[in-house]
Length: 112
Length: 113
Image (cartoon, rainbow over all chains, first blue to last red; front, side):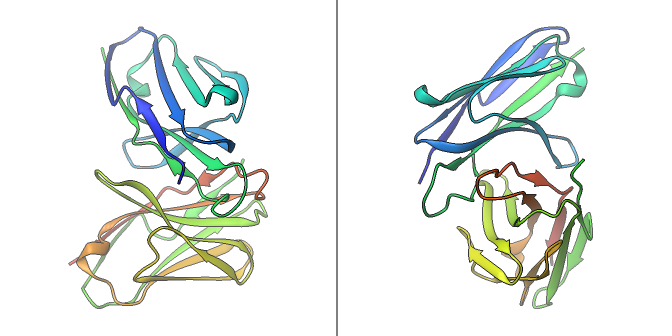
């Protein structure tokens, strides 16, 4: 099956700092999503970004599908950004193409 | 906004009980999914459904069944709960196979004693 690797696994930032999270995937994908899992366990949709660049406030994401990676940028981090960030992809076609495969996540801690 | 709701945030059951987890989405999505999340194992797909009364097994269907009688509702059933089914259960929905942006519910933390 498709492999998804996220880096770094853990990240500690001072409030106000910027960061880049990376997601590498092993095959062509139809869908790539970034999620933030809050302390109560809910997965919050950040970006649906199979290719290209999108921005939403202090967050932006870029996916280079031909090179099989995606980046999530967080600028001017706040304590509320703390949590686990997941990248998830589905296959471009064929068996299992509905299924999202998740990376193991990046645990971000933003300290005041 | 897409809204996916789950019947309970926290649930405690005894070994051997039959357990029903309910999920409802309000956006007329074709696809619905059940995942479980465990420390060290990440999120794993249990079952999904791409239409009413249709279902497909995911990676870990053993010990579970599902029901989708109406488009907006997808139920996960633990026929005889066991302690190794203690987990966080997450429901999701997406519009179509080609536009598979998935939206998740708040999750149900199930403890089986």
